Image (cartoon, rainbow, N blue to C red):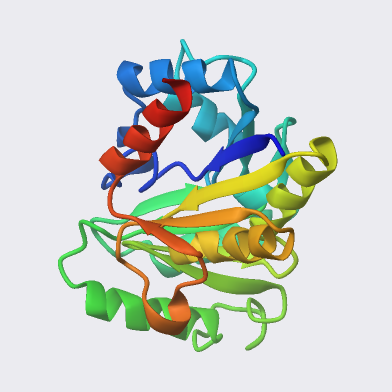
Length: 238
């Protein structure tokens, strides 16, 4: 069975940066992915919005590589209008006095990056207090909890609609390439939905790095680092 190779972006193909704008794909990485897609289908499946992912990969990446954004909710077409403008406005207002935060409102999700925050422990506590509705600025106590789940990442929290996860992207690719074996690489909790779906469909799942262990690890195997991901790619194109 021919493979289709699917990669998370941040922490899998590029090092995690303090801001999304800083996570730019280097040319050497593009050249290896371009060589891989000449032999097998390739996709990048990320929590970034599709416009943000396109910005990050820049020019020079093969158009044959399938870009999927917003945890699988944006396959091929960008979502420009958000149905959650009120929620994102309130969320920004709740944290407007906090320094060293990077806000990333997307059409369907909202992320707060706090890698540079001086007191991340307090930031985490405040985030969950807001999520549980413990602020008088919110219309109701369950304003966020009924619509969204919290997705934790490395130095980032994201509000995601309950029905959206990276398993959606895996299902999209499986329908597009039904005779291919799914092979997915991801590094973080956000990728566990994809790992789990790939496992269910008889594919291969690889965790990049050692951030997850025990019950938090869903992937079948571990690849130690981003460099080892590219070494794996080089074997496929040799």
